[in-house]
Image 1 (cartoon, protein in one colour):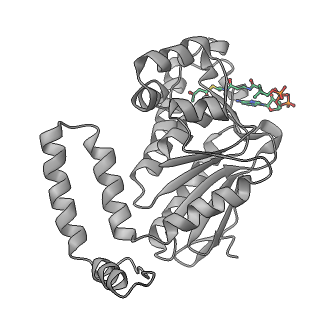
Image 2 (cartoon, rainbow, N blue to C red):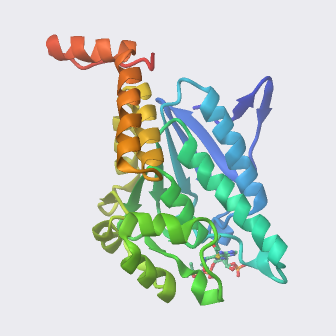
Length: 271
Ligand code: CAA
């Protein structure tokens, strides 16, 4: 298993994340379990670096983002670093999270947030910028910023609202309440809740399923779904038409059609 990111000739050992690649799946593990994997500037820098490696490596088809330890995916932005924070520092913190969330949202490969425990504040906001969310049955999540006199600053007021609607988003943001994985699934925040003891296996299954699909088709579908949410229906449908034509020109479509006719599993190459 490859545990280093390679940019040019330099191999990089990470300090705050673990970066592994196997069977087309790159896994980024937030690795500050003593602080419930709270995000710092250093953690964010390392993730952005790892994503550059993922972008350049055509063998990587899917990214999984998860947290080290049993307790947390991430408890959000580092609260201890907020002592005495000025408005300008807060703005920088917000921009940093925005950059991180957009790096996942704009990555041309699917990203699965694997919520192994608490996903709070910025932790939930980062998870919502991923494409799919798989949670362990014991995971708990919430936009808890209000409890320390703050509001979500990494897109939470917007992505949560788009996911579950204004009424439920207001309820969660105003109360700072934590909800369990099953409630989050019912609300539409979580795609899959893994049964007890089967979390890693479930995440792997979802990742390998996505890794087996045609990469260009997934890339174009992701862009269309994300960009389409920001524009009117007519323009979005026109964009889909162009995307559809691009995907139709891939070798993978020929392979998919041949495999269907020959009654076998397709092998997609991302070409
Ligand atoms: N930042 C920094 N350190 C954190 C942290 C955070 N967000 N969350 C937990 N920790 C640290 C704790 O301080 C503690 O460290 P020490 O042992 O050195 O004191 C360690 O992680 C373990 O945490 P607890 O002892 O608190 O564990 P617990 O089981 O009693 O409670 C918890 C767990 C309910 C998740 C609690 O830690 C908690 O409420 N954390 C804060 C969650 C939160 O409000 N997150 C939002 C942050 S603000 C934000 O993210 C803004 C934004 O939009 C970007």
